Amino acid sequence: MTNNNQHIPSGYKPSPLGIIPEDWEVKRLRDACDYVDYRGKSPNKSSDGIFLVTAKNIRDGYIDYNISKEFIPIDEFDETMRRGKAQIGDVLITTEAPLGHIAQIDNPNIALAQRVIKYSGKNGLRNTYLKYYLMSEGFQTILIANATGSTALGIKGSRLHQLPIIIPSTEEQDRIISSLQLWDTAIAKQTALIEQLTLRKRGLMQQLLTGKKRLKGFDGEWKRIKLGDIAERITRKNEENNQNVVTISAQRGFVVQTEFFNKSVASETLDNYFLVHKDEFCYNKSYSNGYPMGAIKRLKTFEKAVVTTLYICFALKGETTTNIDFFEQYCESGILNNELIKVANEGGRAHGLLNVTPYDFFNMHMSVPSINEQNAIASVLVNVDKEIEIQKQKLAAMQEQKKGLMQVLLTGKRRIAI
Image 1 (spheres, helix red, strand yellow):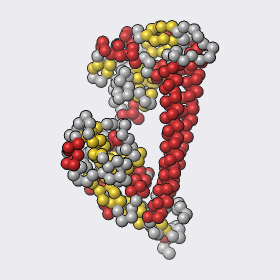
Image 2 (tube, one colour; image 1 turned 120 degrees about the vertical axis):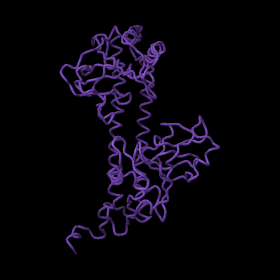
Image 3 (cartoon, one colour; image 1 turned 180 degrees about the horizontal axis):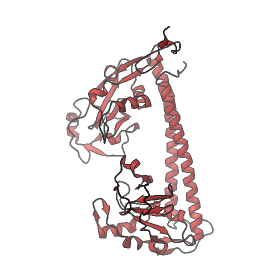
């Protein structure tokens, strides 16, 4: 045995992708699969008809029919899909914007858009095994290494088809598939649990934060106040040259700008930006799908952060009149949207921003209970948030465990006994 083979275990062999079992093989995608490249002219869109799967719909192994809903005319379906119609089980991969997202087709009555290539295994290659392999860290690393582009990575079909895939016997593929599907089932159940808890939280917010449901021991009248009665505007300039520039995301709260945009969009000089301290709030007037009135967020992750002066920043005036957790939950509930709609309808929109002035913002009205009832409501909702966070951490751990299992099963480092 030569020096190169000294560390190769019995029953294994060297390959272009490392040491693999002797009865496994490495093939190029083009040799292991049939494929159809749908890139080219964008199909005509319509308000209804055949669902058009775009790169946005392709997620972690499945097609998300809710994230983006586009259609093509029924009478153009055959022409649009002339290169090859979707078949249940076939595997989709996005080639750019975003790169490398994978889904398995579950409905043949769909059209496929640009930036998508469809693969179907042949000569014993199971489509579901192919899906898992394309999702694996090993393949994704190779995919990115072969991609091009500075701002957005992409890969040519001709290059993608040349990428290698490790293929075990059909029997071992089936065992790998069964093992990973057990994890998929567990992850799906955990995801459903989080969704149920989130829906329960939304229901509690709408009831408790409006007074429709009162906690035991509370029956006093709620007060109608202006936001300016309990909050004061913050216009503190960044004189200390803090470099922690953040953006407000409706879904994620305060996010470091370079992480959110994958680049810095701030000015080189930051002394004219606002400096916000922990537990202060900012209102981002930009609107997006699901958050047409923008978002009000509390700074909790950092001690200090720098934000654009387009945001309306403010702090609560005192703990004796307002519970900060209650106020944060109130903002998250969307109850203030009716007030924002009034202001927006009067001021309109410009350049993607609602025309909400600080004067109008602090003159919005809200109804609040006594400080004691605020404390009680906040405690209930914060505890639900803690439970949701615990379940999210469990989900993240399960996803990491599955990811690690994929890495060893799909390379043959760990074998599943018959």
